[in-house]
Amino acid sequence: MPLWQCLIQRSKWVIAVVLQACGFLAWLRRWRARRGEIPVLALHRVGGSPESRQPQAIPPQVLRQMIQALSQRYTICSWETCVRVARSRDPHPHIAITFDDGYLDNAEWAWPILREAGATGIFCVTTRFVDGVEPHWWDVIAAAYRPTQGPRFRLNRFGQATYGAIAEGKIHRLKTLPSEQLRQNVASLQVAAARDLTIERLPVAMSWAEARRMVEEGADFGGHGLTHAILTNCNDDELASELKDCRETLCRELGREITIFAYPNGDYDDRVVARTRHAGFRYAFSIERGYYTAAGDPLKIPRIMVSEPLYSLNGCNFSWPLFEAEVLGVFEVLLWRRLRRRA
Image (cartoon, rainbow, N blue to C red; front, side, top):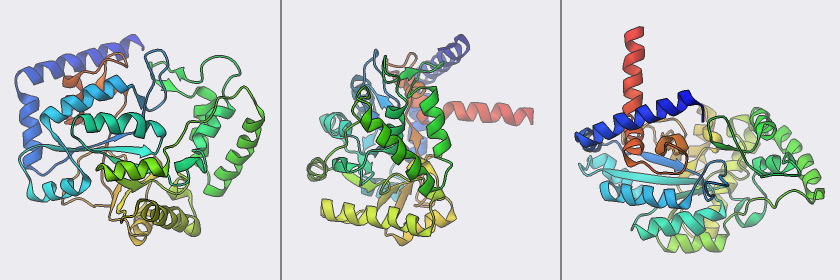
């Protein structure tokens, strides 16, 4: 991690510790609750160690510390409870935790950790990825561009895990392509990857059996697309399939109505929102930062992305003051005021 970023992170940590010690963070937490504002956290994968971190993955020990700290100060609740609490403006703080994509580690690590704390979560899955029908396309890219020697993942200059500069660049470019072109690119790379015996096995998805078990134990499930296509890049037929087929598969496999959706990559526009509503989803998560409120658009629900700089000084040790200050938007408020004075 560069010295300048390390100093910024340390400074934020000092500010957060002071605000926690004087009781400001606790007051702000209750103040947001009385306003009917509910934080919704967005996570993806769980796994890895200090020696082998993975992109968008939180080490299990860090997630456990995070959930334990949250459960002492918030009620980690189902989405139905969140909607009810936001309408009633319950003064007790509530929070929702979502996991996108449907990786196996969600079932093996995230859900047991949540259950240990008496909490629940919302798991938004890509339906063709579940049971391993079709891998996530970015995992194919990462595998195809993996060096024949050395670790699969790299650390960037900020100390965060990445797939490597070449793979990250390719993934970024493919996100801008029309859906059909993206599929063609990935298909050709997948053929090449299958022939290369040095390439690691692609990440594993949870199964429908595991998803059904989690539902029976109290987990919420939602959709994350049929193939995780970027919906704003889809034509009308592709968009209808990504939404309608995703929801129908979830309803059939889980035996209940599914009304929650998470936009792949967080991308949406008015057309996507209208089609999402038409497909039968009542709530949809974006990755825009903010809080869920009853007055907000239920198909444009903001979330707080959980990544290493949000909770840690060095990528592995969890810091509750830093985490809560980030979740409550303390540093955003300070920055906004500074920029406003300059203007």
